[in-house]
Image 1 (tube, rainbow, N blue to C red):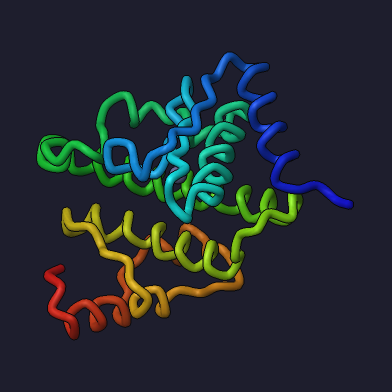
Image 2: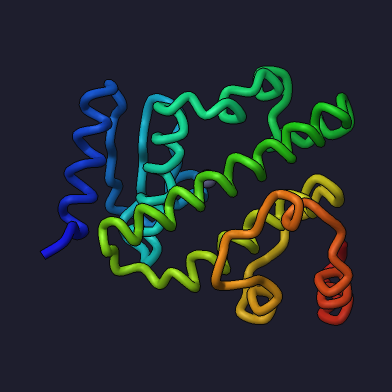
Length: 190
Ligand SMILES: [Zn+2]
């Protein structure tokens, strides 16, 4: 028998305990519209939804980035602007763009770690779907920075993203004609 879900969870809890991080599983769908988050002090996952294990893996990989001292995670740009504050878009567009690009880079690195972890612990997560939704998610950073609008995920838009690998930053951070055309065709304002 190899490693499994219970080992993954107990190893993650142990890592949190060893590093004075609070580990929380919340029996609810979302918390402030998020499925989970890691904020350097808390690793939080909402468990009353089908994505909870994927969310826990993903957030645990942000914890790994933090503990490994992964440089982009600590970039000083995040002390100056927040990508979630729309006024920063106007106040300092260059820093705002930089913060978005680095955020996309952090997420790509996180999801690459997550894919490895899913394999290592033989977790019951559909890897193709995980990689595809991750690639979609990474592309949303470019679009949100460019347009101020978020992309809604559905099965049709997901088809535009690969399932077999996590795309590089170069691939994620670019204009995409196919995506533009798709959005035009379904009248989603860009
Ligand atoms: Zn993330």
